[in-house]
Length: 427
Ligand SMILES: Cc1cc2nc3c(=O)[nH]c(=O)nc-3n(C[C@H](O)[C@H](O)[C@H](O)COP(=O)(O)OP(=O)(O)OC[C@H]3O[C@@H](n4cnc5c(N)ncnc54)[C@H](O)[C@@H]3O)c2cc1C
Image (cartoon, rainbow, N blue to C red; front, side, top):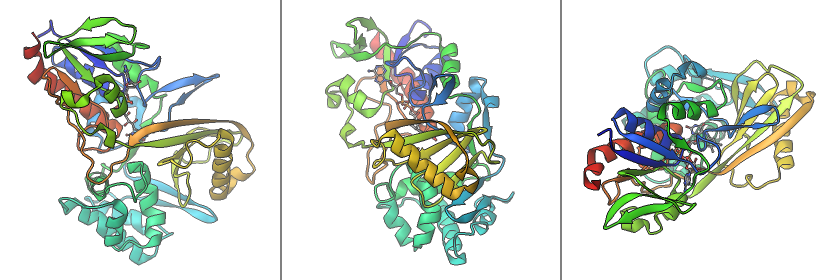
Protein backbone atom coordinates (compact mmCIF):
# COMPACT_ATOMS: atom_id res chain seq x y z
CA UNK A 1 0.00 0.00 0.00
CA UNK A 2 2.83 2.42 0.78
CA UNK A 3 3.74 2.57 -2.92
CA UNK A 4 0.39 4.19 -3.72
CA UNK A 5 0.26 7.92 -4.09
CA UNK A 6 -2.77 10.18 -3.98
CA UNK A 7 -2.98 13.80 -5.10
CA UNK A 8 -5.15 16.00 -2.89
CA UNK A 9 -6.33 19.17 -4.62
CA UNK A 10 -7.10 22.00 -2.17
CA UNK A 11 -5.25 22.87 1.02
CA UNK A 12 -8.25 23.81 3.19
CA UNK A 13 -9.25 21.76 6.24
CA UNK A 14 -10.96 19.18 3.99
CA UNK A 15 -7.87 18.60 1.86
CA UNK A 16 -5.46 18.61 4.80
CA UNK A 17 -7.56 16.16 6.80
CA UNK A 18 -7.91 13.92 3.71
CA UNK A 19 -4.11 13.88 3.33
CA UNK A 20 -3.55 13.11 7.01
CA UNK A 21 -6.12 10.33 6.97
CA UNK A 22 -4.52 8.84 3.84
CA UNK A 23 -1.15 8.83 5.57
CA UNK A 24 -2.71 7.23 8.64
CA UNK A 25 -4.02 4.48 6.33
CA UNK A 26 -0.54 3.95 4.87
CA UNK A 27 -0.99 5.88 1.63
CA UNK A 28 1.28 8.71 0.53
CA UNK A 29 -0.50 11.98 -0.16
CA UNK A 30 0.61 15.19 -1.80
CA UNK A 31 -1.41 18.39 -1.47
CA UNK A 32 -1.76 20.99 -4.25
CA UNK A 33 -3.02 24.40 -3.18
CA UNK A 34 -3.77 27.25 -5.56
CA UNK A 35 -3.13 30.06 -3.07
CA UNK A 36 0.11 31.18 -1.42
CA UNK A 37 -1.65 30.52 1.92
CA UNK A 38 -2.59 27.15 3.36
CA UNK A 39 -5.78 26.44 5.29
CA UNK A 40 -8.34 27.72 2.76
CA UNK A 41 -10.92 29.69 4.71
CA UNK A 42 -9.24 28.79 8.01
CA UNK A 43 -6.16 30.91 7.61
CA UNK A 44 -4.45 34.11 8.71
CA UNK A 45 -1.95 36.53 7.21
CA UNK A 46 0.18 39.50 8.14
CA UNK A 47 -1.09 43.02 7.66
CA UNK A 48 1.70 45.33 8.75
CA UNK A 49 2.96 44.06 12.09
CA UNK A 50 -0.24 42.12 12.96
CA UNK A 51 -1.32 38.67 11.90
CA UNK A 52 -5.08 38.66 11.38
CA UNK A 53 -7.49 35.79 10.83
CA UNK A 54 -9.31 35.57 7.53
CA UNK A 55 -12.45 35.75 9.68
CA UNK A 56 -13.34 34.89 13.25
CA UNK A 57 -13.90 31.13 13.57
CA UNK A 58 -15.54 29.42 16.52
CA UNK A 59 -16.11 25.75 17.14
CA UNK A 60 -18.49 23.95 19.46
CA UNK A 61 -18.07 21.14 21.96
CA UNK A 62 -19.97 18.86 19.56
CA UNK A 63 -17.29 19.30 16.83
CA UNK A 64 -15.73 15.95 17.74
CA UNK A 65 -13.81 15.29 14.50
CA UNK A 66 -12.44 18.84 14.32
CA UNK A 67 -11.26 18.58 17.92
CA UNK A 68 -9.68 15.20 17.20
CA UNK A 69 -7.96 16.66 14.10
CA UNK A 70 -6.53 19.50 16.17
CA UNK A 71 -5.45 17.02 18.86
CA UNK A 72 -3.57 14.88 16.32
CA UNK A 73 -1.72 18.06 15.31
CA UNK A 74 -0.70 18.59 18.95
CA UNK A 75 -2.57 21.90 19.05
CA UNK A 76 -5.31 21.23 21.64
CA UNK A 77 -3.62 23.59 24.12
CA UNK A 78 -3.81 26.39 21.53
CA UNK A 79 -7.60 26.13 21.40
CA UNK A 80 -9.91 27.16 24.20
CA UNK A 81 -13.30 25.61 24.90
CA UNK A 82 -15.81 26.77 27.53
CA UNK A 83 -16.44 24.38 30.40
CA UNK A 84 -20.10 25.23 30.24
CA UNK A 85 -22.23 27.15 27.76
CA UNK A 86 -22.19 30.82 28.63
CA UNK A 87 -22.95 33.85 26.43
CA UNK A 88 -23.03 37.55 27.17
CA UNK A 89 -25.89 39.37 25.41
CA UNK A 90 -25.48 43.05 24.53
CA UNK A 91 -28.34 45.24 23.44
CA UNK A 92 -28.59 48.87 22.44
CA UNK A 93 -29.84 50.97 25.36
CA UNK A 94 -30.15 48.03 27.79
CA UNK A 95 -27.95 46.48 30.47
CA UNK A 96 -26.08 43.35 29.30
CA UNK A 97 -27.31 39.97 30.51
CA UNK A 98 -25.65 36.60 30.62
CA UNK A 99 -27.02 33.20 29.57
CA UNK A 100 -25.32 30.54 31.69
CA UNK A 101 -26.03 26.82 31.54
CA UNK A 102 -26.21 24.69 34.68
CA UNK A 103 -24.41 21.49 35.44
CA UNK A 104 -27.57 19.44 34.74
CA UNK A 105 -28.30 16.75 32.12
CA UNK A 106 -29.08 18.02 28.59
CA UNK A 107 -31.31 19.65 27.51
CA UNK A 108 -32.35 20.81 31.00
CA UNK A 109 -28.89 22.34 31.55
CA UNK A 110 -30.03 25.23 29.30
CA UNK A 111 -33.07 26.15 31.40
CA UNK A 112 -31.13 28.46 33.77
CA UNK A 113 -29.54 30.08 30.70
CA UNK A 114 -32.97 30.89 29.27
CA UNK A 115 -34.17 32.08 32.67
CA UNK A 116 -31.33 34.61 32.50
CA UNK A 117 -32.58 36.03 29.17
CA UNK A 118 -34.04 39.26 30.52
CA UNK A 119 -35.01 40.59 27.10
CA UNK A 120 -37.74 37.95 26.70
CA UNK A 121 -41.07 37.40 28.44
CA UNK A 122 -41.55 34.22 30.48
CA UNK A 123 -43.87 32.61 27.86
CA UNK A 124 -41.25 33.33 25.15
CA UNK A 125 -38.49 31.73 27.24
CA UNK A 126 -40.66 28.64 27.79
CA UNK A 127 -41.51 28.40 24.09
CA UNK A 128 -37.80 28.44 23.22
CA UNK A 129 -37.02 25.75 25.82
CA UNK A 130 -39.85 23.61 24.49
CA UNK A 131 -38.68 23.97 20.86
CA UNK A 132 -35.11 22.99 21.79
CA UNK A 133 -36.29 19.98 23.80
CA UNK A 134 -38.58 18.84 20.96
CA UNK A 135 -35.86 19.17 18.29
CA UNK A 136 -33.99 16.26 19.81
CA UNK A 137 -36.85 13.81 19.37
CA UNK A 138 -37.90 14.98 15.89
CA UNK A 139 -36.98 12.92 12.84
CA UNK A 140 -37.12 15.66 10.21
CA UNK A 141 -38.35 19.24 10.01
CA UNK A 142 -39.84 20.23 6.63
CA UNK A 143 -39.84 23.68 4.98
CA UNK A 144 -37.83 26.75 5.87
CA UNK A 145 -36.50 27.65 9.27
CA UNK A 146 -38.72 30.77 9.41
CA UNK A 147 -41.86 28.69 8.71
CA UNK A 148 -40.81 26.10 11.28
CA UNK A 149 -40.31 28.72 14.00
CA UNK A 150 -43.71 30.19 13.14
CA UNK A 151 -45.24 26.70 13.46
CA UNK A 152 -43.60 26.44 16.89
CA UNK A 153 -45.45 29.67 17.81
CA UNK A 154 -42.25 31.61 18.41
CA UNK A 155 -42.95 35.28 19.12
CA UNK A 156 -41.37 38.18 17.22
CA UNK A 157 -39.24 38.95 20.30
CA UNK A 158 -38.04 35.33 20.51
CA UNK A 159 -37.02 35.52 16.88
CA UNK A 160 -35.18 38.85 17.24
CA UNK A 161 -33.53 38.25 20.60
CA UNK A 162 -32.80 34.53 20.49
CA UNK A 163 -33.22 32.71 17.19
CA UNK A 164 -31.59 35.32 14.94
CA UNK A 165 -28.44 35.86 17.06
CA UNK A 166 -27.90 32.11 17.39
CA UNK A 167 -29.28 30.55 14.22
CA UNK A 168 -28.33 33.13 11.56
CA UNK A 169 -24.57 32.83 12.34
CA UNK A 170 -24.84 29.05 12.82
CA UNK A 171 -26.59 28.60 9.46
CA UNK A 172 -24.95 31.63 7.84
CA UNK A 173 -28.23 32.28 6.09
CA UNK A 174 -31.42 34.27 6.63
CA UNK A 175 -34.06 32.20 8.45
CA UNK A 176 -36.33 32.49 5.37
CA UNK A 177 -33.71 30.84 3.15
CA UNK A 178 -32.36 28.10 5.42
CA UNK A 179 -34.08 24.76 5.83
CA UNK A 180 -35.91 23.92 9.03
CA UNK A 181 -33.97 20.66 9.02
CA UNK A 182 -30.63 22.52 9.26
CA UNK A 183 -31.97 24.50 12.24
CA UNK A 184 -33.33 21.34 13.84
CA UNK A 185 -29.90 19.73 13.44
CA UNK A 186 -28.22 22.67 15.23
CA UNK A 187 -30.70 22.52 18.11
CA UNK A 188 -30.58 18.73 18.46
CA UNK A 189 -26.80 18.42 18.10
CA UNK A 190 -25.51 21.53 19.86
CA UNK A 191 -28.16 22.81 22.25
CA UNK A 192 -29.79 19.52 23.21
CA UNK A 193 -26.90 17.13 22.52
CA UNK A 194 -25.02 16.97 25.80
CA UNK A 195 -23.91 19.39 28.50
CA UNK A 196 -20.72 20.19 26.59
CA UNK A 197 -22.03 20.19 23.02
CA UNK A 198 -23.01 23.89 22.85
CA UNK A 199 -19.84 25.08 24.61
CA UNK A 200 -18.07 27.65 22.43
CA UNK A 201 -14.39 27.42 21.56
CA UNK A 202 -11.87 29.42 19.55
CA UNK A 203 -8.19 29.44 18.74
CA UNK A 204 -5.78 31.36 20.93
CA UNK A 205 -3.29 31.51 18.07
CA UNK A 206 -3.66 32.81 14.50
CA UNK A 207 -5.60 30.30 12.41
CA UNK A 208 -2.72 29.64 10.00
CA UNK A 209 -0.97 27.65 12.77
CA UNK A 210 -3.52 24.84 12.25
CA UNK A 211 -2.76 24.35 8.56
CA UNK A 212 0.98 24.76 9.14
CA UNK A 213 0.95 21.99 11.75
CA UNK A 214 -0.97 19.74 9.35
CA UNK A 215 1.46 20.50 6.52
CA UNK A 216 4.39 19.55 8.76
CA UNK A 217 2.87 16.12 9.29
CA UNK A 218 1.93 15.62 5.63
CA UNK A 219 5.31 16.55 4.23
CA UNK A 220 4.50 17.13 0.54
CA UNK A 221 2.39 20.28 0.33
CA UNK A 222 2.72 22.61 -2.67
CA UNK A 223 1.33 26.14 -2.48
CA UNK A 224 0.79 28.45 -5.48
CA UNK A 225 0.15 25.28 -7.50
CA UNK A 226 -3.31 25.48 -9.11
CA UNK A 227 -4.67 22.28 -10.64
CA UNK A 228 -6.45 22.75 -13.97
CA UNK A 229 -8.11 19.37 -14.51
CA UNK A 230 -8.12 15.63 -13.98
CA UNK A 231 -5.86 13.54 -16.20
CA UNK A 232 -7.98 10.69 -17.45
CA UNK A 233 -7.15 8.03 -20.02
CA UNK A 234 -8.97 4.86 -21.14
CA UNK A 235 -11.76 5.51 -18.63
CA UNK A 236 -9.34 5.62 -15.69
CA UNK A 237 -8.25 8.61 -13.64
CA UNK A 238 -4.46 8.68 -14.05
CA UNK A 239 -3.56 11.86 -12.17
CA UNK A 240 -3.84 15.64 -12.43
CA UNK A 241 -3.00 18.40 -14.89
CA UNK A 242 -1.50 21.53 -13.37
CA UNK A 243 -2.36 25.00 -14.61
CA UNK A 244 1.25 25.33 -15.82
CA UNK A 245 0.62 22.47 -18.27
CA UNK A 246 2.43 19.65 -16.43
CA UNK A 247 0.73 16.28 -16.14
CA UNK A 248 1.44 14.34 -12.94
CA UNK A 249 0.57 10.64 -12.48
CA UNK A 250 -1.18 9.48 -9.28
CA UNK A 251 -3.01 6.33 -8.23
CA UNK A 252 -5.88 8.34 -6.82
CA UNK A 253 -7.14 11.92 -6.59
CA UNK A 254 -9.14 13.73 -3.90
CA UNK A 255 -10.73 17.00 -5.03
CA UNK A 256 -11.22 19.09 -1.88
CA UNK A 257 -12.34 22.37 -3.42
CA UNK A 258 -15.56 24.45 -3.26
CA UNK A 259 -18.44 23.53 -5.62
CA UNK A 260 -17.73 26.17 -8.28
CA UNK A 261 -14.03 25.29 -8.40
CA UNK A 262 -15.01 21.61 -8.63
CA UNK A 263 -17.27 22.32 -11.61
CA UNK A 264 -14.35 24.07 -13.35
CA UNK A 265 -11.95 21.19 -12.59
CA UNK A 266 -14.31 18.48 -13.81
CA UNK A 267 -15.62 20.52 -16.76
CA UNK A 268 -18.50 18.05 -17.21
CA UNK A 269 -19.32 16.97 -13.62
CA UNK A 270 -22.13 14.62 -14.72
CA UNK A 271 -19.57 12.42 -16.52
CA UNK A 272 -17.98 11.85 -13.10
CA UNK A 273 -21.31 11.11 -11.44
CA UNK A 274 -21.37 14.47 -9.66
CA UNK A 275 -24.65 16.36 -9.97
CA UNK A 276 -26.30 19.50 -8.67
CA UNK A 277 -23.23 21.76 -8.19
CA UNK A 278 -25.22 24.73 -9.54
CA UNK A 279 -27.65 24.44 -6.59
CA UNK A 280 -25.05 25.65 -4.06
CA UNK A 281 -25.63 29.33 -3.37
CA UNK A 282 -22.73 31.02 -1.60
CA UNK A 283 -23.29 33.16 1.47
CA UNK A 284 -20.81 35.84 2.54
CA UNK A 285 -19.35 36.61 5.95
CA UNK A 286 -17.79 39.99 6.72
CA UNK A 287 -15.46 40.65 9.66
CA UNK A 288 -14.65 44.17 10.81
CA UNK A 289 -11.45 44.36 12.88
CA UNK A 290 -11.19 47.39 15.17
CA UNK A 291 -8.29 48.43 17.38
CA UNK A 292 -9.22 50.86 20.19
CA UNK A 293 -7.01 52.73 22.64
CA UNK A 294 -9.30 51.57 25.46
CA UNK A 295 -8.33 48.07 26.51
CA UNK A 296 -10.05 45.16 28.13
CA UNK A 297 -13.82 45.08 28.05
CA UNK A 298 -13.92 42.09 30.43
CA UNK A 299 -15.37 39.60 27.93
CA UNK A 300 -14.02 37.25 25.26
CA UNK A 301 -17.07 37.42 23.06
CA UNK A 302 -20.68 38.55 23.11
CA UNK A 303 -23.81 38.37 20.97
CA UNK A 304 -25.18 41.75 19.92
CA UNK A 305 -28.98 41.62 19.79
CA UNK A 306 -31.03 43.26 17.08
CA UNK A 307 -27.97 44.29 15.11
CA UNK A 308 -26.40 43.42 11.74
CA UNK A 309 -23.26 42.80 13.76
CA UNK A 310 -24.28 39.54 15.40
CA UNK A 311 -21.18 38.74 17.45
CA UNK A 312 -18.15 40.62 18.74
CA UNK A 313 -14.92 38.96 19.87
CA UNK A 314 -12.20 40.58 21.95
CA UNK A 315 -9.11 38.96 20.46
CA UNK A 316 -6.62 40.97 22.49
CA UNK A 317 -7.02 43.92 24.85
CA UNK A 318 -8.54 46.69 22.72
CA UNK A 319 -8.73 44.54 19.54
CA UNK A 320 -12.34 43.73 18.66
CA UNK A 321 -13.44 41.58 15.74
CA UNK A 322 -17.07 42.08 14.69
CA UNK A 323 -18.62 39.20 12.80
CA UNK A 324 -21.45 39.82 10.31
CA UNK A 325 -22.95 36.59 9.00
CA UNK A 326 -25.37 36.14 6.10
CA UNK A 327 -23.92 39.46 4.94
CA UNK A 328 -25.43 39.58 1.45
CA UNK A 329 -26.46 43.20 1.74
CA UNK A 330 -23.13 44.24 3.26
CA UNK A 331 -20.34 42.32 1.56
CA UNK A 332 -19.92 44.85 -1.25
CA UNK A 333 -20.18 47.99 0.90
CA UNK A 334 -17.04 50.16 1.18
CA UNK A 335 -14.83 49.35 4.17
CA UNK A 336 -15.25 52.84 5.68
CA UNK A 337 -19.04 52.35 5.74
CA UNK A 338 -18.72 48.95 7.46
CA UNK A 339 -16.31 50.37 10.04
CA UNK A 340 -18.73 53.23 10.81
CA UNK A 341 -21.62 50.78 11.10
CA UNK A 342 -19.76 48.54 13.57
CA UNK A 343 -18.47 51.46 15.64
CA UNK A 344 -21.98 52.84 15.92
CA UNK A 345 -23.49 49.46 16.85
CA UNK A 346 -20.76 48.78 19.42
CA UNK A 347 -20.96 52.20 21.01
CA UNK A 348 -24.75 51.81 21.38
CA UNK A 349 -24.43 48.41 23.06
CA UNK A 350 -21.20 49.08 24.97
CA UNK A 351 -21.23 52.64 26.36
CA UNK A 352 -17.67 52.09 27.65
CA UNK A 353 -16.53 52.19 24.02
CA UNK A 354 -18.34 55.39 23.03
CA UNK A 355 -15.43 57.60 24.09
CA UNK A 356 -12.66 55.18 23.05
CA UNK A 357 -10.39 56.27 20.23
CA UNK A 358 -10.22 54.04 17.18
CA UNK A 359 -6.56 53.47 16.35
CA UNK A 360 -6.92 51.27 13.31
CA UNK A 361 -9.54 49.34 11.35
CA UNK A 362 -9.57 46.65 8.72
CA UNK A 363 -12.28 44.66 6.93
CA UNK A 364 -12.01 41.04 5.78
CA UNK A 365 -14.75 39.55 3.62
CA UNK A 366 -15.40 36.19 2.02
CA UNK A 367 -18.25 36.22 -0.50
CA UNK A 368 -18.25 32.41 -0.58
CA UNK A 369 -17.88 31.63 3.13
CA UNK A 370 -20.50 28.86 3.20
CA UNK A 371 -23.51 27.71 1.16
CA UNK A 372 -27.19 28.22 1.96
CA UNK A 373 -28.56 25.02 3.53
CA UNK A 374 -31.74 25.47 1.50
CA UNK A 375 -34.70 23.09 1.87
CA UNK A 376 -34.18 20.05 -0.37
CA UNK A 377 -30.52 20.82 -1.20
CA UNK A 378 -28.83 17.59 -2.29
CA UNK A 379 -25.19 17.40 -1.27
CA UNK A 380 -22.94 14.82 -2.95
CA UNK A 381 -20.93 12.38 -0.85
CA UNK A 382 -17.26 11.47 -1.42
CA UNK A 383 -17.94 8.89 -4.16
CA UNK A 384 -17.73 9.62 -7.88
CA UNK A 385 -18.25 7.39 -10.91
CA UNK A 386 -14.49 6.70 -10.83
CA UNK A 387 -13.27 4.43 -8.06
CA UNK A 388 -10.02 6.33 -7.52
CA UNK A 389 -11.52 9.84 -7.61
CA UNK A 390 -13.20 11.26 -4.49
CA UNK A 391 -14.58 14.66 -3.56
CA UNK A 392 -14.42 16.45 -0.23
CA UNK A 393 -15.28 19.84 1.21
CA UNK A 394 -17.34 21.24 4.05
CA UNK A 395 -20.21 21.66 1.58
CA UNK A 396 -20.43 17.92 0.75
CA UNK A 397 -22.82 15.52 2.44
CA UNK A 398 -21.37 14.94 5.87
CA UNK A 399 -24.65 15.48 7.72
CA UNK A 400 -23.18 18.69 9.17
CA UNK A 401 -23.53 22.31 8.07
CA UNK A 402 -20.62 23.88 6.12
CA UNK A 403 -18.30 24.16 9.11
CA UNK A 404 -14.80 23.20 10.14
CA UNK A 405 -16.33 19.99 11.54
CA UNK A 406 -17.87 19.18 8.18
CA UNK A 407 -14.60 19.93 6.36
CA UNK A 408 -12.64 17.48 8.54
CA UNK A 409 -15.34 14.82 8.31
CA UNK A 410 -15.49 15.16 4.52
CA UNK A 411 -11.72 14.88 4.09
CA UNK A 412 -11.52 11.79 6.26
CA UNK A 413 -14.49 10.18 4.47
CA UNK A 414 -12.95 10.85 1.03
CA UNK A 415 -9.64 9.29 2.13
CA UNK A 416 -11.36 6.17 3.47
CA UNK A 417 -13.48 5.84 0.35
CA UNK A 418 -10.51 6.05 -1.96
CA UNK A 419 -8.46 3.55 0.03
CA UNK A 420 -11.31 1.06 0.32
CA UNK A 421 -12.62 1.36 -3.21
CA UNK A 422 -10.42 3.04 -5.57
CA UNK A 423 -6.81 2.36 -5.98
CA UNK A 424 -7.13 -1.34 -6.80
CA UNK A 425 -8.72 -0.29 -10.09
CA UNK A 426 -6.07 2.26 -10.91
CA UNK A 427 -3.23 -0.23 -11.22
C1 LIG B 1 -15.18 34.44 7.43
C2 LIG B 1 -15.55 33.02 7.72
C3 LIG B 1 -15.98 32.66 8.98
C4 LIG B 1 -16.32 31.34 9.25
N1 LIG B 1 -16.67 31.00 10.53
C5 LIG B 1 -16.78 29.70 10.85
C6 LIG B 1 -16.94 29.33 12.19
O1 LIG B 1 -17.01 30.17 13.09
N2 LIG B 1 -17.03 27.99 12.49
C7 LIG B 1 -16.96 27.03 11.51
O2 LIG B 1 -17.00 25.84 11.83
N3 LIG B 1 -16.83 27.37 10.19
C8 LIG B 1 -16.74 28.67 9.85
N4 LIG B 1 -16.56 29.03 8.55
C9 LIG B 1 -16.68 27.98 7.50
C10 LIG B 1 -15.40 27.14 7.40
O3 LIG B 1 -14.27 27.97 7.39
C11 LIG B 1 -15.44 26.33 6.11
O4 LIG B 1 -16.65 25.59 6.03
C12 LIG B 1 -14.31 25.33 5.98
O5 LIG B 1 -13.08 25.87 6.43
C13 LIG B 1 -14.19 24.93 4.51
O6 LIG B 1 -13.08 24.06 4.35
P1 LIG B 1 -12.83 23.35 2.97
O7 LIG B 1 -11.51 22.70 3.05
O8 LIG B 1 -14.01 22.54 2.60
O9 LIG B 1 -12.81 24.52 1.87
P2 LIG B 1 -11.81 25.75 1.69
O10 LIG B 1 -11.36 26.24 2.99
O11 LIG B 1 -12.51 26.68 0.77
O12 LIG B 1 -10.54 25.10 0.95
C14 LIG B 1 -10.55 24.83 -0.43
C15 LIG B 1 -9.16 25.11 -0.96
O13 LIG B 1 -9.08 24.70 -2.32
C16 LIG B 1 -8.23 25.61 -2.99
N5 LIG B 1 -8.47 25.46 -4.43
C17 LIG B 1 -9.57 25.81 -5.12
N6 LIG B 1 -9.41 25.50 -6.43
C18 LIG B 1 -8.18 24.95 -6.55
C19 LIG B 1 -7.44 24.43 -7.66
N7 LIG B 1 -7.94 24.43 -8.91
N8 LIG B 1 -6.20 23.94 -7.44
C20 LIG B 1 -5.68 23.93 -6.19
N9 LIG B 1 -6.34 24.43 -5.10
C21 LIG B 1 -7.58 24.92 -5.28
C22 LIG B 1 -8.62 26.95 -2.40
O14 LIG B 1 -7.62 27.93 -2.64
C23 LIG B 1 -8.78 26.59 -0.93
O15 LIG B 1 -7.60 26.76 -0.20
C24 LIG B 1 -16.26 30.36 8.23
C25 LIG B 1 -15.85 30.72 6.94
C26 LIG B 1 -15.49 32.03 6.69
C27 LIG B 1 -15.02 32.41 5.32
